[in-house]
Image (cartoon, rainbow, N blue to C red; front, side):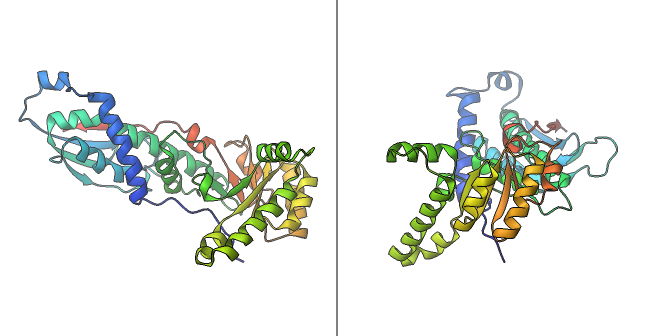
Length: 320
């Protein structure tokens, strides 16, 4: 049976709109309403230059498609010749890091100097995410587990950071609150307070969510495809909660901060009671522990580190 999943982030008009706003902000940060005084003093107005974007080590490149957008914002006379593509594994198999040319840029020297730092920031950030994601994906190779990102992203960067996760071989969790139902303990606490009840259980919340989706499909038939594709996911932190939610038929159950032995038991119970429900391991998982989580048999592992703790990838501009 094919399982539902969150929509993957593509390089599309929405992503480019987000990136364009970030680039405009980068220009304002560097130039405000003034000029690059250093280049204006030292570099002739008619001077032309060539430079290569060079990776200085191994990793996965992401963000090259955005370099042209950066250059256009600074000066449409700048020409870009790409020699790699997003998702390429750079320096794979090398024993020592080496320099790899990703692209060449030609055009007015002053403009290229102004654009240098923003384009390198973009590539360093996104390629760092893609590279770290690939390490997680490789770490769980041979298991059924897929690596997912989270919403722990920089404000305004979410689409492009999630795109970078995909370039590293990972999967995208929900893009935003609009992109799925994910019931967590804070939702249950607030719902209980409003109802004047002692508690609201995850099972009750899943039942209500499924009822709501069914109501929407009946009320707005033209939107049936949307509602049928909407995931209902619920967080549990105890096995008895898992036992209670499985009969309600959520698409995914998130196992919050469970150790591997408990996750393994959760998988056993799921297999016996509701094999079509996928399980997601979440909470404190890192490169040292991700393999153990994957070997429990869960289908999904969500990792905040992919975006909030990815090291900067070493990429530079080498002037020719």
